[in-house]
Image 1 (cartoon, rainbow, N blue to C red):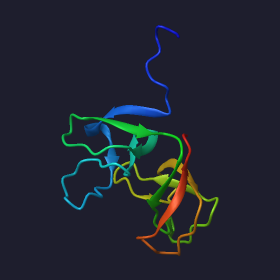
Image 2 (cartoon, rainbow, N blue to C red):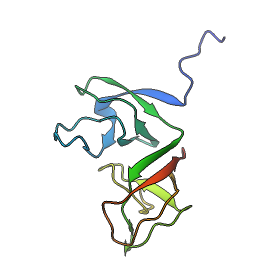
Image 3 (cartoon, helix red, strand yellow):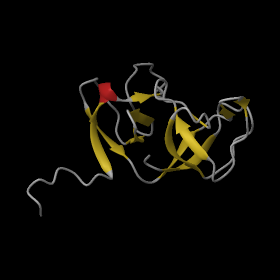
Length: 128
């Protein structure tokens, strides 16, 4: 093995404070939780563990298919999401939608009705 090997790149270890995500814990602690869609710059993925502090190192999957909330909107307003559509993550809020000014997150493997903000569908992660 190469002496300069750091990690496999499928799962990255990132500092919680550098991740943007929607706080899905219901605790409103502002920390990433396992299953949250996350973004750091143009690196996207899904947190695999819960954070307990902003200094925690969080394992983030960058490949795979995950069930995630996706909003039925794009840059012009309400629009349906169809299987195969590109899904983007807002780099300031962590919200997933078809708003293409965000960072490419993945491909929808399900449908979301136009304007719906609570639908959870399977999304295949894609790195930009």
